[in-house]
Image (cartoon, helix red, strand yellow):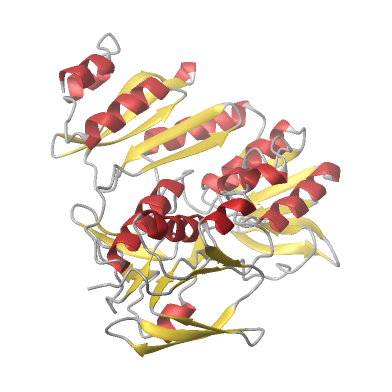
Length: 414
């Protein structure tokens, strides 16, 4: 039985880390809680970095997840600017041990939680270390990119995923010449169906962004600073700035050092427990076994929050709280994409509305049952379907396609 007065170390002052520490207090933990992060800033939101913050529409102080008074009031010791080099479990069964930081500090703990996040996947090609090549993960990254974009003329974005397209939309709106280079044959290929990929391809091109598909990047040109991008088809694109968004590599080093099972992330069960049950993990660093979709790594704020709450309950020996349907959003220019559910493994899609109006939804089905929705500038569709999915309900495909049927009426009936 977990002791609520025991001390807890949360490694990673991320969205998941902050939520985990706060949830421990909310659930009655009375012992010391140490929240340790590598950055010197107060823990902050990351999604706006490629959206409003990059465009200069959101000041840095509004990024903070909680004000400094919160940590003091909740008796959470927030340690900033520290990296942990090693963790030792003296009692793997119960979870006790100690951590050593890079500066030589030692932190003892009775319970351990990992919310270590990840780092952007790097290009490994000639010229990738030139000035003007940007990745987007933290505030410093976003500020450096915003500074370079202010004087840039030609911008190349490597990667047609959410981060890349959000950055491309911001740069295009600022009047830059922007080209997105994607190695796959469509945009957002890992996240949405071909119909949605096709819509976003046309939408970005309408707004002035060039998009090159089925093409790799072979080298970055320049001496001290990038001046061009060499493509696998032999072309060279001019570039004052290059933004790379080709995925996230989870931080698993500490987990591997502890002997925890990892496979492209820290493996956890539905209770957020690792292969050493006394240790929990939450957020972008994890891979969880889903009963319907196999193993998944969900990089989203809602997942980080839900998983952190579950991890906190597990550390205290309490039942995990009910989890909602996964959801996600992406702002690209004036297009707000809202996703609810998990579409992997779908065998049918149904279009609701006209993509030409830039207000429509795409419903995903598996075995005749609704499993997810992608809604573009259609918040009512999104909210209705999200609530239906959370209630375990479905929408027949012919009904989903009929815009004369109000989905909120189906919700009321449910």
